Length: 140
Image (tube, rainbow, N blue to C red; front, side, top):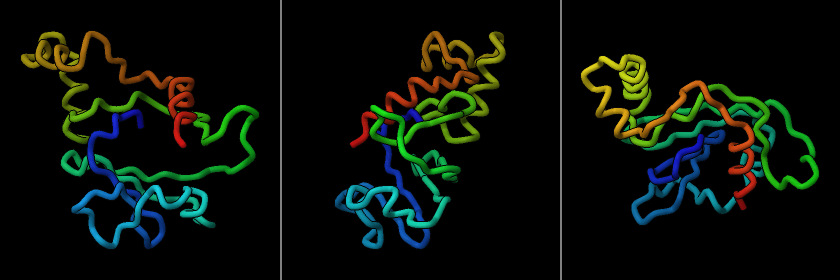
């Protein structure tokens, strides 16, 4: 997604849950570093990813195709995408919709605060596949 991995997250694959293992993690959740995605998925082609439990981001991931990687690439490759990753800590889907509403109206009473928080430039339509794929190759 492009987030900083600064919040708790989990993956639900079939009837198993995987997460980073912190002292207070649920005992039924398995260590996400103990298995590869290919092994965890088996024949499954869908799984769920939850990020920032306070903001409540929920994603359904669908594996559309599996093939040998392009020479020089070690890990997954993103072939297509839509829109930018919502900013970290923006309040989940509702907060992100509000942010976009505010940013679209320079006369909005929260415009200066929001642009100060998010920075000078945020293009919600931008999906930079090269940036995404560089980040994906850093895993491992």
